[in-house]
Image (cartoon, rainbow, N blue to C red):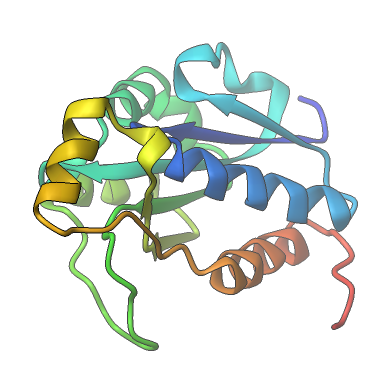
Length: 171
């Protein structure tokens, strides 16, 4: 086992990857070695001392790639520090809101006992979708939006860094 932390993500439109990258950056700034990987690119977890997994909510469930990752690595995850985050609602989340965990995640959370599960608002940008959806969006007078709360992501990642022995700078 190394001293490296895996930050793995499953994404559909890159919003979740952006959150995972921000988490990895905060860890690195705190002196915690972090490797950012798509869940499909991850092999054996024995090389990591902890894992942070992010997936987006997709059609009322967690991204299928995240499920496959958890199924493939469940026994290893049960024996190490794990954090989960879910990205998905495209509307801003009011401060202090409590959101139900998607039902398909409940059993997973019980089995691997993550140290924390965070929910972050997502983002949908024109470059994330095909031309047809962009045209439909314009016709419906709908807009693409960025609702990720980077401050909330940073605070969550700083808490993880502190738990992992990193040095978080006071701001």
